Image 1 (cartoon, rainbow, N blue to C red):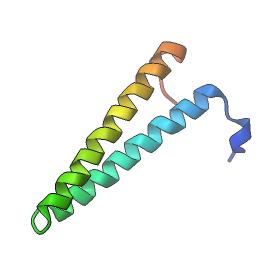
Image 2: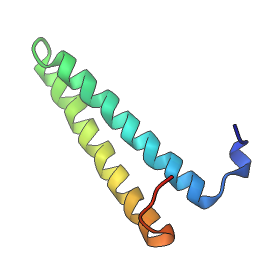
Image 3: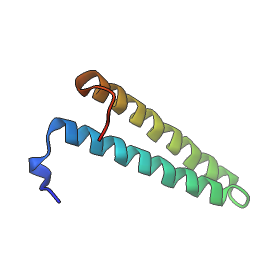
Image 4: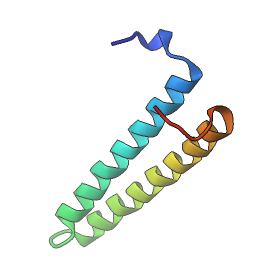
Amino acid sequence: MRNFSDLTERDLLALAISSEEEDGRVYADFAHDLRDDYPGSAQMFSDMAAEENEHRRKLIDAFAERFGPHIP
């Protein structure tokens, strides 16, 4: 494990992409689990998952522009 202060810009972007992906999955799981009993809350979590996916897409684009298509 490395110290946060030792991470490069490439490392930080890859970490941010991973975090957005994980957050989106968690929100999508919440939406799925709530859908039957709490459709309004499920929709809110679905919207949050979509927003996280958009954040991830923008970070991937930034990463590819700076460092190429391979994300570690």
